[in-house]
Length: 570
Image 1: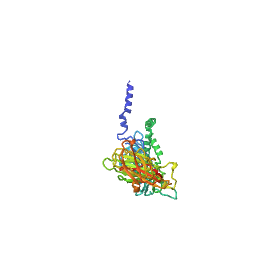
Image 2 (image 1 turned 120 degrees about the horizontal axis):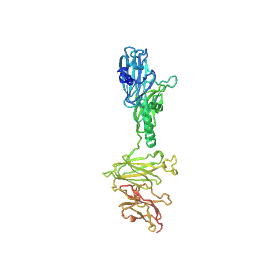
Image 3 (image 1 turned 180 degrees about the vertical axis):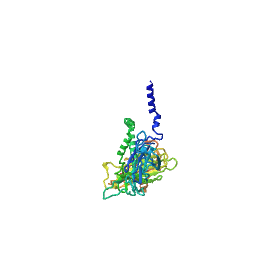
Image 4 (image 1 turned 90 degrees about the vertical axis):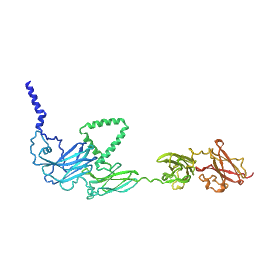
């Protein structure tokens, strides 16, 4: 038992905390595996959020100048450069119990550390300065406080540019030469890195990117933005399929549990999105971006890309808003005005005409009346207010009435409907593709519905009441008190045109053609028939009679023309 007790005590002494503190000094700092920054080589570095990464390097004996370039990606980072100078050279053999790496030997030696440069931002930045004592180690510290990101570091010894990163001109701004409805033309000062030698294409070129959100400070940030956009689209697509969501959640959980998953993901991301989709990739310092949307703001970035070293620098981007589409002119429609509109069925003229009508008074009501002058033509009428469509209907050979109510102003759009293939208009005969339409808007009609049309627009003549110098006509009226006017027109015998143009207004006809005007009203629709005896006619002559229903709040309604021949002998 005594022997066992002594063995346990010995193990506790050699393995307990006291022994560790006795073997390891108090100021010893446990370091991660050393990462050296190589000269003249672009070193990619992954920065986990909130953790500081350190890169070490030393200079050659003859180096009197150094430059360090750090290129962030999508988020701002903090980076600093410090130098640790030793008063005495480190011993060749370390006297500590454990094996030390060379940076740790410098760290433990006597000397001081001086911070020579700091930077915070997301732009490519370079420090250039003199070298320190030969027995010095430089420490590059990198940190990202926002999110995991990727940066690139480059070390160059000696004077002159490194050549690893392209150079920007003194004016690194992107200028806008011209803005159109679907295109924008850009130009910028050329970079001294993009030089054509001996007719060979240089390994530097320009890359122009366009997006809707903002300007990018680096090509890596542009790749990251594209990757996020693709991920967002994929997420929206996965929402529609629940099974895929479950598979993705399981895969994601497994992904983050792997020790090297993040580095593998970044390397695959870099390979997959190496080309961010440049709209212009050329050596010329001018680019025209086309196929844009009208009245849309775009952001434009220009990068100088080194295809050999895989590096790039960014110009100061710009933005522009494309011009809006040319809107058709809107014609004001006055109260009670009869407007004649000429429409065309050509494919180039199907945009339509637009009119605006503002009713009088506080009721904001009105009556829109439309009538086509061609029995084979159709018009699509769309009435809207403040961007909201109120009604849309087709108007053919019949007079149409649209009740307007509930808005202070109305936008009326007329669009001619193209005819079918069986009645197409021959090329070069544009006159046959045009037709007229008359329209009137009035706020004098205060009822809450459109006026009632007669049951039929036919005119009847009584053969038994026909004489040598008179005929008797009859037509159906409405239950409203209205004025009816009868017109007559004598036509030569044998004439083929016996009907009157449907769009001719009563006011435009000669005064001697008007025979009579009478008021009529019948509350019973079945008995709403009125008659008129037209006298002072010549025997054996052919006459065309027209009846108009006159209204003060809308277009007159023309009945169908009636042709009657008086008797030759009585």
